[in-house]
Image (spheres, one colour):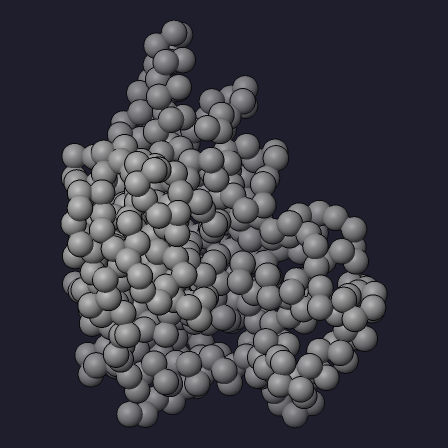
Length: 467
């Protein structure tokens, strides 16, 4: 359990009236920690009884206070040229359950038996039936789609899927014999809201107390905020770090309000290290601690930053492969590395779009990673049933381009910036559109129209949709 040692308590615990408007990032990879039984039917897992193929705990979607789902509005926040993005946010009202796009191969799959001996099967897949690159994108997608009980499942191809099940298995499951690599039951929205309300109440009590009473309340607050973070982000409590002076790769690092640069509420970056050691630097995820009061915003942040994390890891993987051939990676002069990547594209080992991502990341650029994170988050929100969030996502993205926070994706024959990424994302949007039901198609059309109104020159604004 992380403890905050700052002299000023306000730097450890945000004031109860601290705004929670905007939202952003975060991610980490868990192991199983066994929660205790809860009033809403979530059991305490018995380590001896449950399969270790299951991962940790997870979070909700709707904030009953403002009835909104907050997604990102990212403003770049560079630190030493090695950050990989982040931001602020917008909000919108989520809609009711939305059918998945296309056919799901998971529908009806038996996942196993939960703590109460109940059979657990998949009743619905939410978001993309093709799955997501990592678990945290899938967790956010499950919350966007209001799956309850919710779970995420990793299939044999490595993709993570967001699903709704017949019974909750947060805390453990005796896994069935099925074609999956891993599965994780998520904490119920009811449980998360219960702990969130307790956290907010304790914040207020701490701010209004003093002396021995305050010390006791602070201890309880530390315990509650750790529990809430674990529920929200789907990691065991041991994977939450509250010490902003010692950021830890692989954990979710919650930092005091105002700690992140540029007014951002989340950040994904590589840790400082030798200039030419990019492929081996630790990657850390930082979140403003206020996200604990804003579960909906936390989910938007989670998806966006999970995409950034994926891109940084991709870049590191290719730098490592380059070094394994006997080459020396020189970050100040990536010409040889880029020539080698071009050869890999020719061999079919790497797509042109992925080459652009890798080069952009090693050079500390934001244009291409931000394009991917914004578009993917918008599609996840839309297919999950939050069209207003998707609209805000695209609108904020094109406004950031107009304001010069990052460049448009283009190729005018003389100068180019991410044309392969632009084309790949365009195809993704068009393919998703063709699979959508009519009402969702209209929502995507409206989102692109809103983006075009704000910045007609942005590449997103020029996308044409056809059935």
